[in-house]
Amino acid sequence: MDHIRIGDIETSRFLVGSNPFSGFSHQGPERDQEMRRYFTAERIKEMLREAESLGVTGMVARTDHHVMRLLLEYWDQGGTLTWFAQTCPEVGNHEMCVTRAADGGAEACHVHGGVMDFLYAQGKLDEIPPVIRMIRERGMQAGIAAHNPKVIQWAEENLDVDYYMCSYYNAAHRDERAEHVSGMKEWFLEEDRRIMTGLIGGLSRPVIHYKVMAAGRNEPKEAFDYVAKSMRATDAVCVGIYPGDKPDMLSEDIRLFDEACKVSAPTG
Image (cartoon, rainbow, N blue to C red; front, side, top):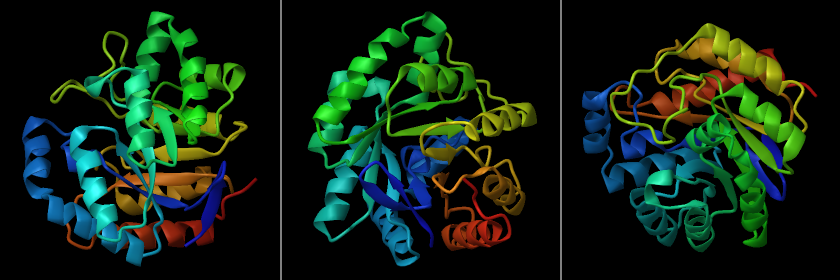
């Protein structure tokens, strides 16, 4: 598997996402509960170990209590994946989330995409530069995530970060609240994917492409072909996996991604 560098971190180009572990299906409350029931602690650790065996070296995971407890157990049992930590507003403010990430063993930390979208809508993005400094002071690579391309454009002009997390879909505008609410109305528009991937080509920092599968709505081969054509040599992709639907989903997704990259080698 190909590797890239994000700041001081060398990582695989394919990263495992953790939304399914916490029951964030983006497919409705029943599906959320199904994922929470499926992902026992042992099943999560089993999947992370499988990812290691397939050449994956990094994961993107929330700073929530559930994920952090599991990561401690996973690492204590010999796990080696690098943690790219995502702040999460429901467990505390910026400072608390950054502190949790650093104390929990993260090597990188980025501000939650919903938070960034919300602060943009509220005209409060001036509170983000101190957060980036805080992340760096705690010894981590610093980044932001966003679903709204305008947030990424703002960051390119106003922030000094190590990486961006760019969602292919602006599926639920976070103008009134930052958190995702189970069952909230969401939409996955091709126009949003086109706008975000068009923006990525001109960015000055590495990008982790996410929500590339439209939360399970896109056909996997088409999705990975599109990703491979949209990626630069500096970029990675983050994919949430739910083996409850297909036991070999992780290995199949990695195979499809690797095959797509061989046909459309990342540029730049």
